[in-house]
Amino acid sequence: MIPLSATTSCPELFRQLRREWGNVAWVELEPGVGAWLVMGYQELLTITRQEKLYSRDARNWRLFQEGVVPPDSGLGPMMFWRPNVIGADGAEHRRLRRPLDDGVAAIDQRRMRRAVETMCRQLIDGFAERGSADLVGEYAAVIPMLAIADLFGLDTDQGHELLAALRALFGSAEDSQAGNRKFEEILGGLLHARKQAAADDLTSRFLAHPDLRGDAEVLQSMVVMISAGQETTTTWIAQTLRLMLTDPRFAGRLRGGRLGVDDALDEVLWRDPPMTNMPARYALRDTELGGQRIARGDALILGLSAANSDPRVHNGDQTIELGNRAHLAWSAGPHVCPAPIPARLITRTAVETALHLLADLRLAVDAEELTPHPSPWTRCPASLPVHFSTALIGDRS
Image (cartoon, rainbow, N blue to C red; front, top):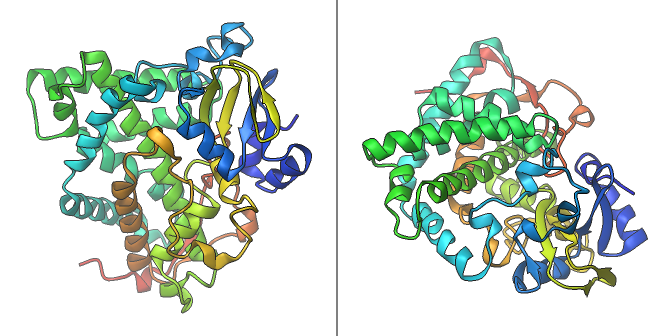
C-alpha cells in the first residue's frame, strides 16, 4: 500500500495509483491506517457536495471508533474531530461558517496590502546584504503568519511562536500534538486579553459575533482561520517563487519571460495547489464511488492536486491554467475555502516584492535538488536557497 505522504514528495505516484485503482485509491495514512484517496475531479465534487452521505464529522471515522487510530496519533491535529466549522455539517456548519465569512468580508484589503508589503520589505532588509537567503524559511513561511497574526491582534513575537507550533502541527509527526497544544495556548491568551479590552481586530469581531456561542467556539474559529491560512499561503508563495525562478515562461522580470506573476499564481493552483491532499470526509453508509465499494465509516482524503490533473478534465496543455479558475485548489461545496481573495493578495504581494527588491535573483542549487517539507498534506519546498547581487538590490524606497 502506498503511503499518502509519498504522494507529496513524488506526484508521479498519482499516475501509478490511477493505473492500479482508477480515480479512488486505497492508501496508507500511517502504519496500519488506511483511507481512500479521491483523485477524480467529478468524484471529488461528489464527496464535497453531498454532505448527507459524506460527512466532515470525524467522529464517524470507523478506524478511530475501533481504536485502530490511537488518541495520540500524529494524524490527530489534522483529522480528529474538533468543535468547529471544519467538523460540522448542515445547519451547524452554516452557523459556524458565517463568522468566518463576515470576518473575511471586513478585511480592509488596501490596508492589508500595505501592511504585507511593509513586512516583506523588513524581512528582506534582514538578509539583503548577505546576497543569499532561504526564501522559504526566511520569507515565505513568515509572511502569512505575520499578516494573519496582525489581523487577529497578535504582535510579531507571538506570530513567530504560532509559526513554530503550526510547523509541528502540519507535519503530522510525533510533535504534532505538542504543537497543537502550544498553538491553542497562545490563542487562548489573546482571547482572554480581548475579553478585557476589545480592539479593531478579528478576535474582537469573533467575540462579538452572534453566531459564536462561548469562548470555545471563538477559539476554534480562530484556530481554523489561522492554521488554514498559514500553511496554504506559505506553500502558494514558495511554489510561485520556485516557478518564477525555474521556468523561463514565468521569469518575466528575471530573464525576459513572457508570462507574469498572476499567470504563475494560477498555474501553481492547478499543478501544485497549497493543499496537495486534504482531510477528510467520512462515509455515513455503505456506498460506491469511482468503481470502489466504500464502507460506512471509511475516511476519504481529498486529492486536490490529483483531481486537478485528472486526464478527463486536463490534457496536459500548459496553457489551460492561464486565467482558468476551474481548479479545485480551494476544495468545493459547503466547506470551500472562505478566504481565497486575501490569500491571493498576500501571495501576490510577497512574490512581487521579492522579485522587485532582489535583483539578479537566482537559485543557489539545481532545481532538481529542491525537496518538499515532510507532510502527507502539503508539498511546500523545504527550502528555496537563492543568491542575488547586493550591488543590484532593487529600489527599496
